[in-house]
Length: 369
Image (cartoon, rainbow, N blue to C red; front, side, top):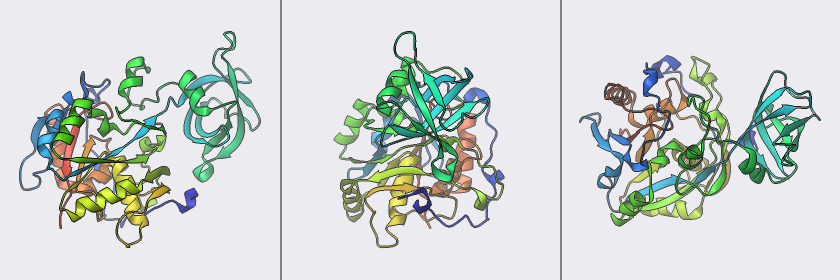
């Protein structure tokens, strides 16, 4: 499937504007480091809204909020060390952020440099004096909408990135990546390498918490969605119908589709861990084209979920707090309603919750009716 064939939705109706998803966030609430313990972060329970009130909890209380027969669905993508620092043949500095690894030791990437490298030129990385240097060839432009650079590496891309790359921390995290980030900006069940941003809601899970959830009779399943750098792409149009989503690769296994079907048949709830899991599950439902169930296998998605979308799979959502005016603010507003989300964010700011990738989490109920 090409990017032109990616799963998508009709453009938003125009009922909402970009400014509807804005809010003021004190900068000191942007978490720069993770909580000391993964499951020790805070959890804002919004499942009683709009009729009830939000409840301040800790994340390790999550098992008590789930029922036997519920299904937790995780994104098992693994974050790669996608950021490289090097030089062009001219000696100028260059920063490469690999967006997607391709067959044949090739990749699509974002490049930051004073001037874009020319097709056919070489980029130099590693320490040549120590014998660990390598060169990457610039093949031209490529990727969705030809906005990325097409690169050829001299060997296995994943191995070279693991040896020479840096953790691609989000732009709002102000420190350079460290060994702690290599561990904590990764879920404990990360399996399939390819993401350049973490599925951050899943960062709160540790092995004891997963065991407690299983002991409660809650089942689990996995999807894979390789989160791209476009997750931080700003929405530049006040008219949301003009925004074009970045494309992401995902896969829903047959076992997960079967687990969702069994859960629904038994009256259980499908609980998505993170917006990336929502995007994978709902994309697979949209791709089923009204036939019911989920389309299994790999695919590309650029699904843009805004208020008015009717969710087909997910009943509850565990998610971190998102950037103002972002597509993820639109997704959670679609999921739980504009006013409940505004109320939850106002509560979180007043109670000094920690925001964004290394921040705290929410538990949301799907808007009914």
